[in-house]
Amino acid sequence: MSSSVVTVVAPVNIAVIKYWGKRDEELILPLNDSVSATLDTSVMCAKTSVFASSNITCNEIWLNGKKESFSNKRLINCLDAIKSIAAKEKSVDDDFLSWNVRVCSVNNFPTAAGLASSAAGYACLVTALAKLYNLKSDVSCVARLGSGSACRSVYGGFVQWHAGTDPSGKDSVATQIAEASHWPEMRALILVVGDKAKKTSSTRGMNITAQTSELLKHRIQHCVPQRTTSIIQSIKERNFPKFAEITMKDSNQFHAVCMDSYPPFVYLTEVSHKIIEIIHKYNDLCGGIKVAYTFDAGPNACLYLLEEEVPKMISIIKHFFPSTTPDNLVTGLESTSELVSSDFL
Ligand code: ADP
Ligand code: DP6
Ligand code: CO
Image (tube, rainbow, N blue to C red):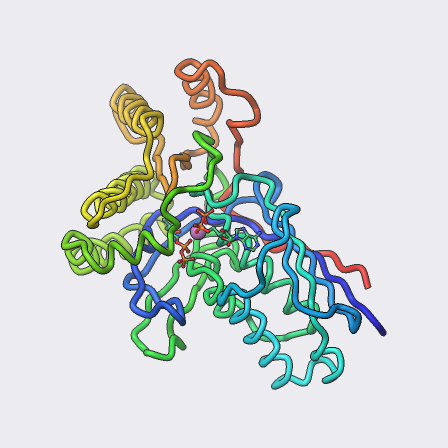
């Protein structure tokens, strides 16, 4: 064998309890637990091919058709971690393991715009590498070394990333709370407000917050632990109003800590705020919570709602934003998916 290729598709996940702040930058260990749902790959995904060959002179990565530098520490950490597991497992021969790799990845949605491209991207990369080297081990912890949120995209359904307390990171792992089929009516609607890369990356933003925000301390000590317990309970009970209220409050608090950082940075735009207002008005008119919004580090909204609300919500969005086209209004389905993969050897 002189070369080998593996291609994998991986989903995004959108947090309902946000991860924001690290206690260890190198190992990517978070300051708080987080909870998310993994979206269906039929709508948004990263697709990554990894190619190993004795003819490749140095490791290469192409992202969305553009060659990027492989000197990125996170890429190197992921590749090294996967290779060291392969060496321990003796899953491939030493010769194959010594070859360089070429990585080609594309996202079918905006990159670095607050739609979890780093989560799908690194989950995809490490899953592809694990297949290339025939690994048996779970690779969620390796995905975490690429981007914290990526450790959650390795599982479908509702997922918790436990912050853990061990300095080595061995207990900072993601676990599944429930499969997608547990709550089959759950839907995610992605409203693409802007597709430009954010000015302050998630990594840099959370670093500024961790160093400067007083509100972050309050959030971590007094809000996130209670919210995590309650939202997990709401998922287990399929209690939508409770799930939705916690989701919206946590998104709002996350954006408040960005404002409380020094210097402050803002991810939400006027349109994002308009969406927040519309959802609250709609819920008020319904006399109960029917739809939840949540925003990651970008202007784009993820609405969580039950299936019966989707047509109503789409017509409301089209009413307020008449220029909405299928390109910027995507119905992301269910809360989940398995990693789909195919190999061409
Ligand atoms: P997002 O909100 O989209 O997750 P981040 O600021 O967290 O934005 O991360 C964006 C970075 O994630 C990109 O600059 C790139 O380094 C990395 N990334 C995104 N998509 C991929 C991918 N498919 N494969 C590898 N890395 C990716
Ligand atoms: C707002 O996982 O992208 O989306 O670990 O530095 O790569 P790094 O950051 P990243 O941060 C995600 C932040 C968030 C909330 C979340 O997904 O939990
Ligand atoms: Co990210």
